[in-house]
Amino acid sequence: MEVQESNLRPCPPLIVVSKIEVTDDKYKELIDSLPKEERFPPGLRKYQGFWQFQNAIPGVLAMKEDFKPRRDDVIVSSFPKSGTTWLKALTFTIMHRDKYTFSSHPLLKLNPHDCVPYIELHYALRDEQYLETLPSPRVLGMHVPYSLLSDSIKTSTCPIIHICRDPKDVIVSFWHMFKKFDGLMEPLSFKQTYELFCEGRVPTGPVCDHVLEYYTKSLSSPKKILILKYEEMLKDPTNGVVRIANFMGCPFSEEEIKSGLVEKIAEFCSFNELKNFDTKQSEGNIKSYYYRKGIAGDWQNYMTPEMANKLDEITKEKLCDSSFTF
Image (cartoon, rainbow, N blue to C red):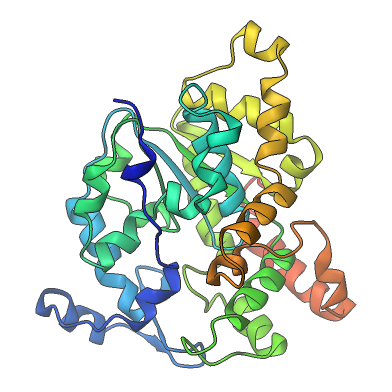
């Protein structure tokens, strides 16, 4: 079925789940029993090893119980602020490259998060039926740890593409994003954010545990999970485009490669282009928080050497039993 732009609609930012009132007795008793972290507004709960916005947990649980992927779905996954928006733009554009020209592409009018909706968000909002209105093949996103996925996703043939990033840059991007949610949550200082991040007490954290679950599974199921590193994608985006297309099962033809389509997609979905699209869509759009600098190494402008070394040691300790490195 051909994707129509009319099937897509603006998606609220994932942060809105923090303000949803949990009234469903099915989950309320469980949620109230979970460990709580009040230093991160508006409050987190720890569920099966991962901290979540308290009011996001019903969406995660409902997704785990009820979501049934289609055979041709593609799922993009990440820890927040690890290159999610970029990966969504790339996967959507690659998947539907035969349906849209660059001059009439949905990304010119819609944010990548509108084109690739978060599964858990729509379940949290009790709007999961929207996902069923999207024609196949769907590209869907999530920030859910692998251990919290439904068995239907784990045993399905739909590929999962997971992008990860140096935790030091994740913290900086994380802090800047949450600073912009005026009225939705009280802002934290960078030092407060850093301390909570080091403790793993941030939404979907700890970050290393989150990434390691996907990485470990990718070792035994390389056709199921593709791990992408943000920094490697920055250095060679065209190679990243080819890897994504091959993994999704829609490799570029020789004709497409010769025509320069790979490079055109990489440029069309580049940080500067996506930020430019977003600016044109609506001045002051709340979704401008998705874009800041899009570079590697910006942590050096915010952390002291001591702070960076501490986080590097925490990361090294977490990863010591694996072959993974950021």
